[in-house]
Length: 436
Image (cartoon, rainbow, N blue to C red; front, side, top):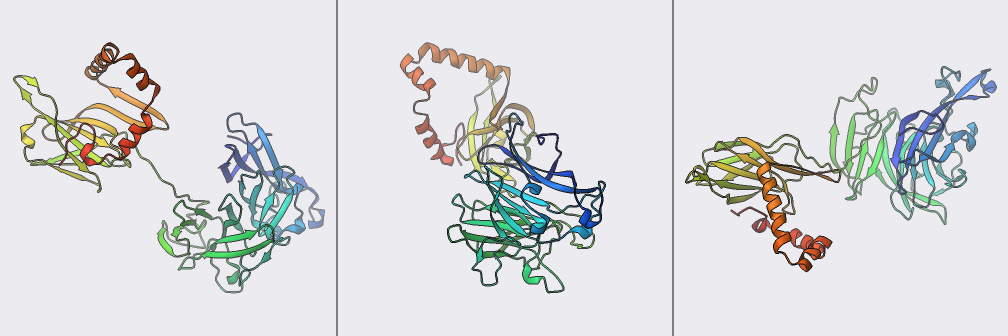
C-alpha cells in the first residue's frame, strides 16, 4: 500500500486497525516560515498519518501535525540538529507511533513533544495529552513517572476500556541528571473522568540498557511484555510485574557506532510448513525422523507392508509416536518384515499434515500426498492410483448411501460434534495409525 495524495510512506507506522483499515505515516517536506530562525526560505518535515481502505487504497482520514501543534508545544527544541533548508528540513515534531481504538480516535506518540496525545477521529483536534508541555493529567505516581517521557515510542492502549496504556521511553527521566542514562518500558493507568495517571509497572533492564533512538513495547497474550531496545541490539521479555524472563543480545552493544539496530521487534506465534520432505534415518530396528521447521507436528504414524504372492499387501499399522523433541525415534522389532513403509505427520487433532513412502532403509522414496493449510487454502497433490480410489469411493457413496444421510453429510449437520470428537482424540485413536 502507498499513502494517498502522492505522499511517500515511511517506516514509523504501518498497522491494521480494529476496523480492518490501514494506518500509515509519512514525513512531508513542507515550506514553512522560519525567518525567526534566520532562514529565508524555510522547510520542515511535517508529520502526517493517514487511514486507508486496504482493498481500494481510498483515503479515509488524514492528520497533519502542523495543523494542530505549534513549535511552542514541543518539549524539545531540536533546531540545532537541522538547518531548515529544502535539502535539510527541520524535523520539529517526529511522529513515532499511531494507534486507532474502537472509539474511532487515535493515540499518537511524537519524539519532540515528549508526550502521548489522544486525537479526535472526527476533527483531528487534541482531546488530551499525557506528558509534555501541554500535559492534561495529574500524575499520582510516587516519582511522577507517568507523565515524564523523553523520545517516547510505540504508545499503545492495553485494553478496550482505555484504562491503561504502555509506551517505550528512550530515557528514563530519573537518570537525566546522571552521567549515564537508561531506557524503560512503562505501563500507565489513566482515569479519564478524574484525569489522573499513574505508572504502575516499569520495565527496566538489569543491565540498564540505553536506546538513544527507536524502540518498542508489546503486550503479549500471556500477560508478559516484550521490549526491543531500538539502537541497542537487545530484546527482552518481562513478566507483568517487571521481572526479566528472557534476554537476547544479537550484536555487541556499541553506543557510539549503533551499527546494528531495529525500529521495532514483535513476538508472535509462528506456524511453519516446510516444503522439503522429512529427514529419515534407520538404525537396525529404529527409524529416526525429523521435519525441520514443521511447527504443527504432534505425532508421527508409521505403517508397513510387504510383498505377498508377488503382490503388495495392504498397509499394517505399526505405531503412533509422540513428537516432543527435535528428532523422534520409532522403534519396532519386526522392522525387517516389511519392504515399504508409510510415514504420516499428524497435528494435535489427528489430522494428517503429510504422508510419505519409505523404503526399507528409511529413505523417502516418493511423496504420496501432501496436505497443508497455507493462508486458508488447502493444497493436495495425489497420485493417479489414489485418484482412482477417490472416484470409486464417490461412486459408492452415490450408489449405496441413502439420500437423507447423504444430504445430512453435505449440509454439514453433525460437523460440530465431529470436531469435538476429534479434539478429544488421544494417541490411541489417531486416524490410519496403530499404537505403541
